[in-house]
Length: 138
Image 1: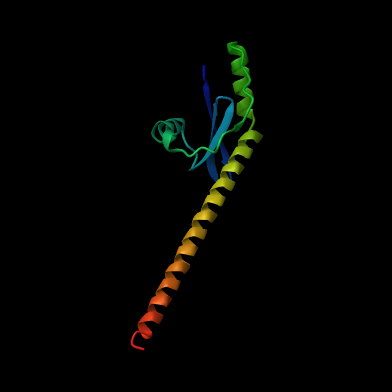
Image 2 (image 1 turned 120 degrees about the horizontal axis):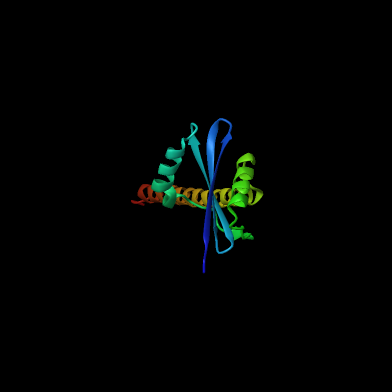
């Protein structure tokens, strides 16, 4: 049976509040970073999740080991308190965000290269057309 876990970490990264969505599905971790701006209230975060979760662009999944947590409520409360004290994002999430940035950068470079080549080809064709027009009568 496939299990999907989700986690949102909201922290202050000067000068904005940032949220990192982590999604673990089939043992693979993918993340997405969202900048909130001013400090979001709980209900604002909830509304954002409800409206925009499916619009988020998660990074490509990386291998992750999912640890089974105990169902003891006291242990869960202890773990939640520990996670609240840990500020920032886990290293796996940081690696996934870095990979996402690199993929976007490569995609952007590829698109700009194609646009540049198309622009050069268009200029070349225009120049050839002008040459043909000038030498039309001879």
